[in-house]
Image (cartoon, rainbow, N blue to C red; front, side, top):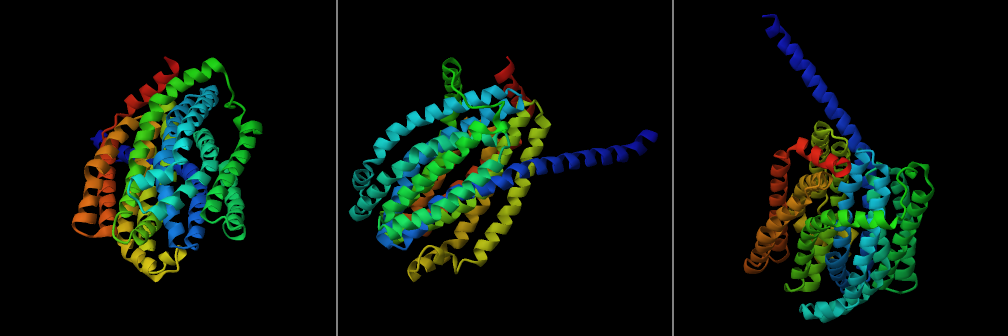
Length: 469
């Protein structure tokens, strides 16, 4: 009888403990995610603001830069960013396991690996115009895209190093220096880009060159911090031939599936832009879909930042052997992300009549964007789920499963649906975007199922074995 009377108290204590743990996890994820929103948005806005300035040069310049951005994303930026994400597993779990020296070694190995990958990418970018013409894209747009891609070469190598250093700092929760450097870079970029585009009359090529200068500026600021800050004293980046080459061998087995996971998703959006180039009125279709993609990408860095927070907390806790804390971090990140989904989609829907004016003064473009907004809102909601769960995958080290999910979601479902609705049903740009929504929703569902059935004790054991056995 007494035992029965105690049960409600025990349940209340247990409930209070769980609630306290959830609040603590919420605070830790927010501590990383909220500043990371500023970092990722600032870094992304460097390219978005360039595109906005190019949009005022005319439809041909915007179309050429849009196609070039799509192709360079497919062949370069997505691959580099994806490979660098392998550090989220290695550095995050090493930091949780208190193997601080490993962070510097892993980062050095990653930088060397990424710079080597940049060499064939840069050669490919020299021939973007010929590649686009071979793909039956409009010749005028292809030539404009080729010029833009060549100028973008200035940004490729600093981008690669930045991705590695960002993961190095992120996994240690050293977010403030990244906030300050990215905001300073954005402030540096706006006048520089304006000067090269409008004052010096370099056109769209000037915008691409300004992006490169801004990335080098950001890298300089973070490089000085990493080199001289006491916060990085125990994890300092350095070169040791034997250790670095050993770290490269550890890096690639995670970097390759990480790259596949991210590239398969990114490539889907860029393939849709390229498909828009063969629709009737290709300049209008590519311009509108590129603007919609820019809006979605800009918002995406909100849930992506939450995914970064989830990745860091999950990897740190797994490295420390705390499987329950890792599970709680996932719940906390998803809670914040779903709140963002409701707020952001509502705001975009209410502002659908005026969003287009930020990118173009042409009424035809603005009206088309207004009609696309409901489809854009659906994508925003699904992004808020999959971005967080993708971060969980990177922190846990099951990127290979994420790669399979993205392959099935986008290439067995999303792109076929986009082609059917866009071309066979003659819905054009709307049809292509419907395909994106189908792929994104399926991706979110599958990642949710995998996360629900994850054995967190086993994941913690795998993480500990990486460093202690």
